[in-house]
Amino acid sequence: MGKKRQANQRADFRKKYQGRVRNGDMTRSFQMGDEEKLADALHGERVSGKGDLTRKRTVASQTLEKSGSDVAFDESLRCGRVISVHGLKSKVLGEDGRRYECAIRQVLKSLNIEQRNVIVAGDRVRFRADSPSDGMIESIEPRAGVISRTSRNRQHVIAANVDYLLVITSAAQPDLKPALIDRFLLTAEHCGVEPVVVINKMDLVDPVSLQPMVGVLSSMGYRVLMTSAETGVNVPYLKALMTGKQTALAGQSGVGKSSLLNAIEPGLGLAVSEVSLDNDKGRHTTTATTLIPLAVGGAVFDTPGIRQFQLWNIAAGEVSGLMPDLRPYVSACRYPDCLHLNEDACAVKNAVADARIDARRYDSYCHLIEELLVEEGSSR
Ligand SMILES: Nc1nc2c(ncn2[C@@H]2O[C@H](COP(=O)(O)OP(=O)(O)OP(=O)(O)O)[C@@H](O)[C@H]2O)c(=O)[nH]1
Ligand SMILES: [Zn+2]
Image 1 (tube, rainbow, N blue to C red):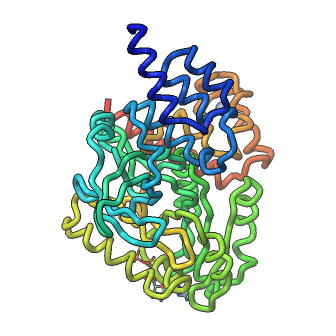
Image 2: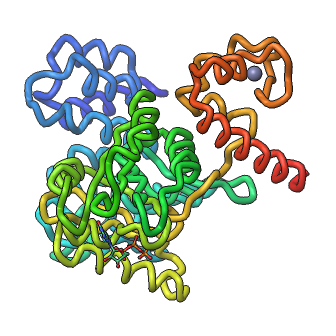
Image 3: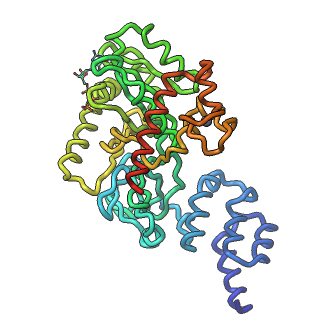
């Protein structure tokens, strides 16, 4: 870089970032002489004063890194969350409570060609409002708790920033299916999303009858909540759990998902099932997931895909590592690739034999493995 250009660039930076960096750091950054280092000085520990800057840090460094732009410093940028995606447009719920129909800035699109998941429901974004109803997404915050599935070796993100996966079951009508709970728990572990097991319709059974299973789940560290949408038992607890969080629901038909949602907020269950119906008819083909905001803050994801989601992208060899009760024993097996089925000197089977692992959970494990091995065999 020519000396003159470098000097001009310094002058530009000085003008742009004046007052945001302590003088010493400013000088050091310029000596280092590149924009990334300046960004580092601006957004790292050395940032001076102004509280808001810290919050901007991730976005700013992400944007600078990706596009070399200074959009993060533009005060007109707003925070929002994506509630649905329709082709190239996304509906964004702004912090002002308004919904904006947003396009996506070209540079963000080109960065994500490979992944095809530029933006999904649940994403936290920075956008610029062009009018009270339209805008442009300028940057996307890093995602946490992503539910995704892989098809043809491509990862499809279905929901982003999922705080909880509610695994909803019923104590009766339909009967409780512990093996199905195990599957949902496994998928939640695989996605890195915290599951919460909800056993609904508790008005129909004696809670004592469920104690053994609930005990096993709780001892693994899973939260289990026994509810009744009918009598309202534990509904306030569920509501408190969901307040301010982004929650996804999984569970078979008829367990009371809509009834629970309605008990939490009138009309919510209806909103969720309407979306599902649209999807079933294939009308919203580009709208895989919708985020339905809660009046108390937070939101519920709805996608039929999540409701029925099963063992996506999980290999047989991974399963024991995703089960908190089996995991501690795995490394003590004689064979490093032990599937804990027929192998000898298997620490998992030994633990089942002397009841350190619940026999029912191990049974579930064996069924899952058999199923996955058949699938793996047929896809080879
Ligand atoms: N006794 C009892 N019945 C319930 C409870 N919760 C829901 N139900 C009933 O169970 C049936 C199914 O409830 P829904 O809320 O439609 O179940 P869902 O899981 O949303 O079902 P899908 O929409 O098919 O996925 C309805 O007849 C409800 O009235 C409960 O806590 N106790
Ligand atoms: Zn083993």
